[in-house]
Image (cartoon, rainbow, N blue to C red):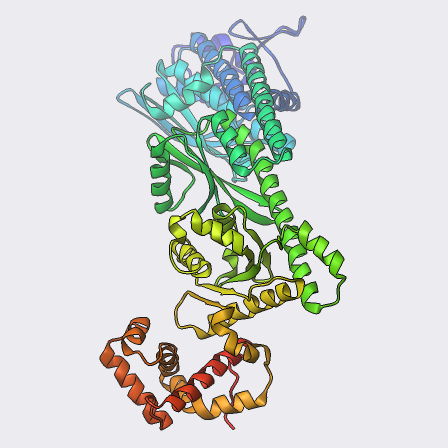
Length: 627
């Protein structure tokens, strides 16, 4: 066996492959002290190091523990490099470098297998395998599989050793790791410019001075986190108080907006529309609209502008979305406040929605009870009064039906916003309004620019059509009511008329009143008469068959012509046809049916048949079969 003194005094330089444990470690058998170049060494079990590592992670968190372990490894490797550099005269710089992997293997840290090692014009590059890494094994034992490489102290050891040997900064990275589930650990080492971004990224792990400073920083972070939590809880509690006091949604988000100095938007569910908003600056609205047009991807939108969206969800039901708009990214404090507030806003929306649905059901049940006719009038009057319906002046029921039922609550919210004193509720698949003559007159006197023309129902339809252009709107109003019985009939009228205008009117958005359809209400309510079907089929059968075969609109053209009392100009405008095109259709109808529409009795007969046809379609979309 060659002694350490032999290796040091022999004329030739030392090769790394000839290093043995007993050649480089002095053991004082009397005191048990181990030394390397007069520096005391320790033999510590990998299990004990694993426990220390586990406790560091538990105390500091993975990110801070990583920095501590890398600094520990760097000091360990740097000292080893310094020691063997003083102890031996190396055959070459390469042999000096190779002594590092030998020492790491000899000390039980890791088995190193170098795949490549190059030194060209002072630049160093190497890569290879780390096998049997104690650090990967201990990490798996205490934490299981990891999403990233975890041999932090070994990375530090290699970086420190190579930096000492080469006299310049060396960056070592672990690209594969056993703790990640890879077959082995794999490293890449190279000298770097200190301005290199990769070096600067890793440099922060080597800069903290001590565990005490880490614990102090960690303690300060905990204190700051506690302060943020207390502040966010105060805001959350204040908003909860607002909610319990009955404050509306605007008050809640206005308070939040002031607390974080950002604009807040509550978006409707299933719709690109705003339920409520508080804008801190006019530019926020403009940037928000641009953000929506760009696809609503949460996060930074421009260099100095961000939009972050948060779902408002309860009982697996999405109630809306809260969008936070402002300059720069959200801070940790702002995010914590928002997370707390989201639950309050969601609770408010869910609570309000539940109350609304309960009120709507109560009123819908009340009307159904009136229609059944089995009630105590005095008790029912009390319940009607409790529900907010005022009989001090004549009232009528107006129903609104939409092509898309998903929009009902949005339309309802808009009506409540525009007419807060109007009694309204949702029944089944439509909105029901109780319109008193006194209220309607007051609206007309207010000269609301959106209610400036025609009767209330038409003005309402036009207003909703402008606001909700993506869905078709059908409005029907019942008879004027002065008693409980007539109120029930007005409700039934409006309900049936909305269905009728949906299937019979040519326009995409339609409105009709009881006064307009009173002459056919008997047909609408008398739904099963075979005579109606037979009469209608005999009169209109050829037109119906022609429309089915050729996908034409002769029947609807006939209806428009008859509704306009044969006025070609008015009919052509309604159908968006030229006069010439309309005349062609009228001639075609007369040829198919063998009639002259200038004859008054013929017009009366066909007008009645058309009204019956669309009345029957209210009940059955395909009421006719060929006899």
